[in-house]
Image (cartoon, rainbow, N blue to C red):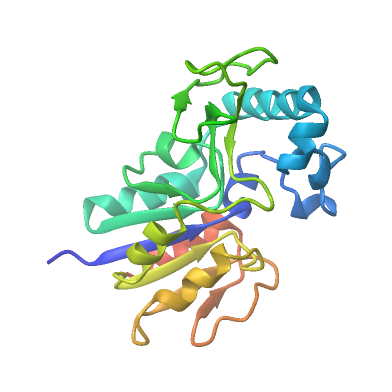
Length: 224
């Protein structure tokens, strides 16, 4: 039976492709506080600003490419069963070739109804404008899990992590909950590796590779 490798990824893997992150900018993203652009209250208060912010993120995503780390993780599928669980809202894993990706925090290239969350639409890199509505007449919003909202894919992700034969953590500080709690779902004898150039939160028994995503993933794969 094929080994199941589960990969948890965060902003650090996308940063190598040129996508900016909240944590790298002192909690600001393009000079916006997370509370101005990434909460339900922000959307209720200033819908136009929030939509414009994510429209800009979508355009930025269109102009960047997957990096070596994305492609190397996709190449693992030639030998293993691989599931990527990502905190990122970009589509760089899919564009890099990964076929089994769980997005914990939503997807930038999708929109959903602001009143009927089950109505989700693929929009690619198109803008969402005030007045764009779902088929039931409600304003569309980014398909993003904002601060203060439930993480609907968390249970599915926890089930996947619990079946891992190896857990690889790439480009995340493991400081954002509930996603960070996923590391506790693995069996006690499952090897855990953390790839992060900074000081990731302590994970007991994890091997740490203090390198950027592409270099660290290449090193980890060379030891498989």
